[in-house]
Length: 251
Image 1 (cartoon, rainbow, N blue to C red):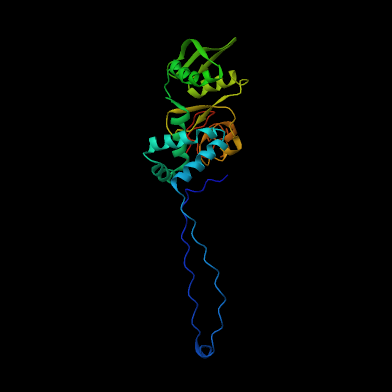
Image 2 (tube, one colour):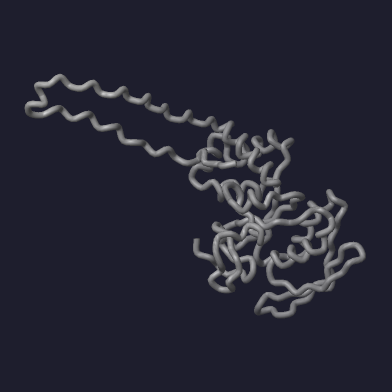
């Protein structure tokens, strides 16, 4: 489903008037001009509330929200932007960044680049608890202070794994590996900053999300915009960094 309602309509030039006959031809009775086609009326302006409804429908189709959250969605929009009208105006300027940022505050959470592991797991386990899942970490040690490389033992039930990590993304990649049979997954949302953002989902529509018309999701499934200049991994059109090597990407 296309979401082009924020695009501005380009004004079409008015048709030029017919030229007057010259010379002898002017003495002849002018030929009857063909009837003009009825000019198309400009499309009716979308009401901001209708725009919000369509955006929510897109989130449902993307697998990021449930249909029953439509009224909550509109309420949160009004709280964040001041009104539905202000949201609609902001959406026209930069739809992907506007809605991605909103989804982070509504359904997701942010993690700073220099993160505390306990706080990261607290945010993750708040979401996982709804599915009866809890991931813990112990024996955290610094492996390389200069590189920010750490190591910890992660536990889920009877399963344990030792992971060395530098970024929140690496931690969530491991958590996703541990919960892969539980029917849920953490996905990363673009922040266009040094922070990271994640949300827990059940059934993302990757084909829809790969088009990045509404929300920019950073995953292998949405990497359709070329290759990273540093490592050659596939990247997305709107990504600020590569998910393989974390290299900044010019957008």
